[in-house]
Length: 546
Image (cartoon, rainbow, N blue to C red; front, side, top):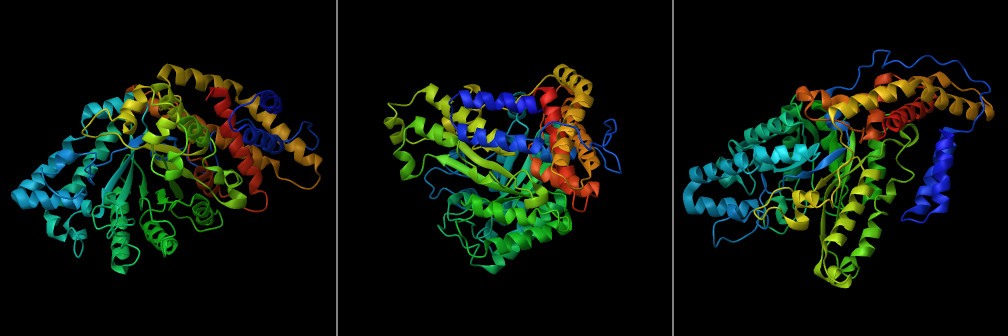
């Protein structure tokens, strides 16, 4: 292991590339974590075994929730946006939101016909051929924006949708049907309560054209939002294919009482299903939200829903970005999610820090393209490749905005077009044969890898003096290695193996938290178990070539 880091450090020292300083710092930290050579004071270790002590191996539901998520949003399916889905707005109608569309259709053709129209959209806009394409192009997970009104008339009372609530009588059934269809294609779904009562932001994608974010100032709206989330949690508790529950989309920056509501909503959801990963908006302040989330994700807390921070990245809207060239923005991408540095990687000390990129695109503004000498396909690819590379390096998953629109294949807003032109690059995915070969290779090298890792760990810490419990490192290593192997092979075991495989534990910090709790680890040397677990995961990935 130490030879590997020495080789990596030599490469970094001898080459220039974006993020060189960060890479050098990371390698130095890893050298310290893995320790020096020498074997003084080592205790004998046992041969690697699958998770023991009552711990169960990862289930299919675990893999669906905690693997690296590579996918897209199904925007404008259950919460309309006119620019994406103009055919769902009557000609000459005003407004650009879901409510504007339903109001116009009800006025034009009545409740019953409008309900039939909307149900056709919910059930048919995403076709089986779309799901097959997503599966074949290595999509693991979809982020599915819905509104509170999607849950049906019972959740529309005293809101802007009360008058039109009958249109949504069967909307939740359509959501469940879509989740089942996705699952049958090996694709998980993050249910995103995109539209909260009153709006968590003032944009039309919250469901109305009110131009207000009244969710934060109206107690009844916040209470209704919590009831909606508890309903979804209860409904999805045993539903195959649900990867997580997002409680809010793009909260206003520094919204009053936001973290108080986050705390109360998560507490209520945890009463229903404490295993469900809960996604929250960073409200455009990733550093602050990570600090809050790590307190929620502390191993010292009573078990509850693990918290994932959702951050969004666009480079086409701000005046500052319009002054840049495409090349400058592509370089800038490599510095995003910097607040994770120094936060992620040590659950025992700091709590779990887990981020996903819930929305991004390959769109740049016209002024930006002009600054770079004009738009061209190669610069689009460079930008998308930078996003793919950085996000896979730092985040637990990404969801491109968006997959479906009236104007397919969507240009730089289109996941399909950006995938087909190789701007957006999926993580490695393999055939069943490749998966089996790599698992066999990893198993053959497991004992030597564990021995080397244990020797380095024990040798380093024993040289520092003091008492340690190195068997915890060995136990953690075994579990981490076998967990990573299970994730890697799970998809290839589904549906007769035609799905291929190669998943990694993408949501690693919250997975460490989960397994630490399940292991019953406690006391002053839990850190040795965590280091062993993480090195077991990386040991498998190294041997499997991922």
